[in-house]
Amino acid sequence: MKLKSFAITLLGCCITVISAPKAAEAASFSVIADGLDNARGVSVAPDGSIYVTETGIGGDGGCIESPSVQFASLCSGNTAAITRIQDGQQEQIFTGLPSLAIQPSGIEGAGPQDIKFDSQGNAYLVYGFAGNPANRDTVFNDSTFGQLYNIDLNTGALTSLADLAEYELLYNPDGTDIVSNPYALAIQGDTAYIADAGANTLLSVALDGSGITGVVPFFSTPFENPEFPPLDPDQPLPPGIDFNTNEIDLQPVPTGVAIGPDGARYVSDFSGFPYPEGGSRVYRVGDDGVPTVFADGFTQIGDLEFDQDGNLLVLQYADRPAWENDFASSLFQVAPDGTRTTLISAGEGLESATSLEVGPDGTIYITNKGDRPGVGQVLSFNPHKDTSYDPQKVPEPTTALALIAAAFGTTFLAKRKRKLANLTKTA
Image (cartoon, rainbow, N blue to C red; front, side):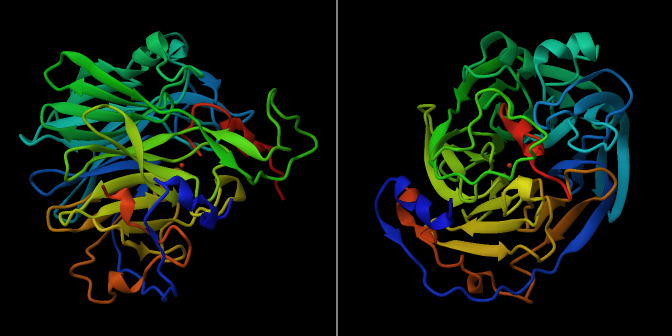
């Protein structure tokens, strides 16, 4: 589906279109860390240090069938790490942590996914899984996966606050396949909010150790005229899949959670197969626990954050459907009045960007090339201090998604049907 055809679904009113796009002037990045293995969450600590999680490359331990790549196996090993960038120096402060990844490539790692700090400076770590939780303790013999922890950054000791994967196994809130992959974390007061990209849920966990206090499931939505990958005639379609259809149920894949200026939770939806252009959304979850569409028309959102001015920053993992194997990424800004601006365009240096953080001085940190081993980066730039470009000069190209004022009033995530990604022909 083209971007222009999404528009009317978002509240159905008050749509304003910006006309001619202008050329973007590239942001000036600093590479503050590189050589990372499946780089994921990035966070700024109260002392100014920057922490990034590396989910690792798995290993030669127990294996399960990948829930996202057909005919591939996720195998375990102690190859994950947590890296700190302090005073310009990059250091793995904890290594040998449990990891899952596709073998032998080491891609699509699952392990320590995200790290965040509360107002007192305490650190919290969410651990991914990417599989049926029933296999966690039996196949891998390691219950580290799929949990939220308080982490002691002096010793590396983990104190479990909630077993998120077990919750999916016991209750399966969205009623589809039983898969858990806790992926992103936000802290608000004495509560942690976790986006589970496998379970399609937003979970609330009390930081005092009293466990899970709430869950918001996200459900599939109709999507018209999807574009599918070309099929390899030697690979049969999985049961129940029909490429000759004009409408599909597009599943949500929660990949990011941020606390808005209004105190609500904002959740990014990567979208499920076939990852259509314009099929990714941002949801707002208020005190009533009901998700409503806040902004639409994005593609494969990997993360989101708010800056100090109340602007929503939206990071696209890839601007094209994942099966096209074009992983150029973009960063957008949505202002409180609905104005949508491109801060970083495809081709300006972002590729398979997986996570986003805004520092107290407005510096933006992005984990780049975060879906593979050995090449992951942490990039930084400050749009307020970088005089080489004016972000107001790079509006979103002309489509009906350019401005939606009424709204202000992405290949290792999904729960089901992601195996189709491997049905395409390879050269």
